[in-house]
Length: 197
Image (cartoon, rainbow, N blue to C red):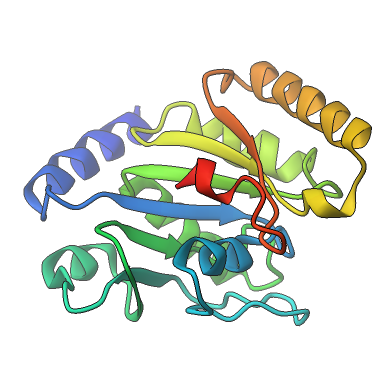
């Protein structure tokens, strides 16, 4: 009941804060490829992506240059802002499995406040128990629409990719998130990125 009340309060507040904007949160574990995907969608390096883990230490809003919704970003509590073409706010969220406990707390708060979530997984960690049992179980009662993106598809063969996508859909169905769209992309080659846009 407390979670439902929280959702009602957040949804009510969100409807009053810059409702013309669509806020998309990029959620995933360490090394899943969230930042690289944000950069691929933006057409340039707007957030830091790298081998150091965790790379994303704070939520970063990526939004159109010169069109900053101050009230909305204040309500979200997002301080770091970069620019990209388009008319949507994309928030690169901290890693859900970071060794820094505060990262998961920030992501949990913001996941309730965004309008849509893109859950980013890679071939190695797509079946991660923490993602499915803790996060996806919560998302099924969320107000946000959910899209699941399998990244790094350029590193696996087509049969491996098909098997992972099938298993991922099975896992989502078991967690009550069967309605989530599953897309496969490569931030390196650009395959599937336009489909996500």
